[in-house]
Length: 147
Image (cartoon, rainbow, N blue to C red; front, side):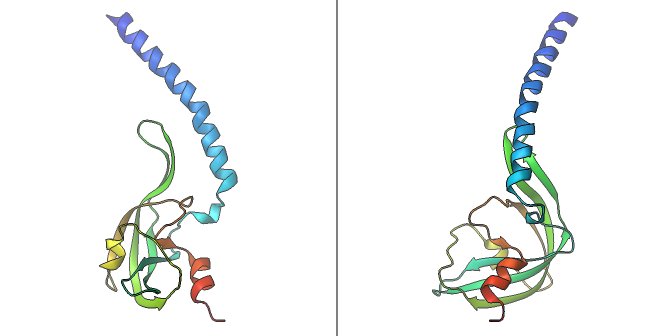
């Protein structure tokens, strides 16, 4: 019976060794394509944004990152992914602003229901995402900065 266990364990180790190379390649690609400052960090100010029924208006919540969660580069099946999970923020302010052309069709109830002083935890953030509701300071300055 020990032989059966040994064969199964050896097959699992071989499969993991094969995946190790693919995960190393994935991590190398991420480190080359995503700048280090793209990830959310503790103490950083970030902005949650969601569209409103009124054309050209968005709800923007300003948040302070209290816990950056963890960066996840593969899931439990060792499939390569790229996200940061379980980020905790404190809502500092809420504003309704004009922003023509903003279109994000995702579920943003956490932003829509936020109140000043709330502690929020959001599931995932991907710096590779094309349309994400969480933005950094450079986005805010580009869209609402003083001209």
